[in-house]
Image (cartoon, rainbow, N blue to C red; front, side):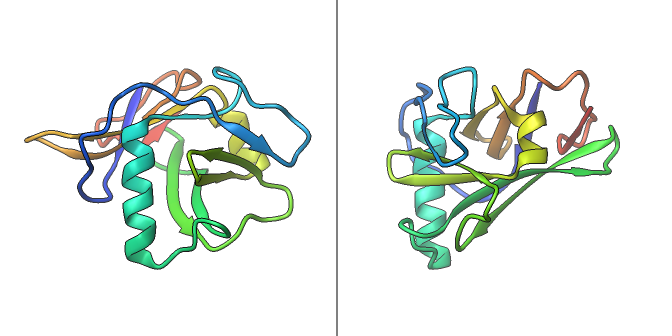
Length: 141
């Protein structure tokens, strides 16, 4: 199921998913095992981090899951200045993604993409763990 989160415009980078390099947590991340991020999403994150003044060497994009929403769980996306102690940290072409252990249970195997069309623009959560989602596009179960 695809979910949309808006954060502004993107570039015309390609659509191929990039295999992450995992840091910490002692787990190697491979395509299908960790989290994948497309080149379009990487470029959009990089641009947004620069606008927010977040250092790519220390900060990154935090992906998470919160209880609530129409379908039971909601995606949470925000910038963070540094990872937390137990976070899984994925690096994609110089962009870091932070995921807390509880959220990783719901997000492993997910692909983060960025879409910009005439109708909508924003991040798509392509999550094989999602069994259903609501019409608003920000919650799932």
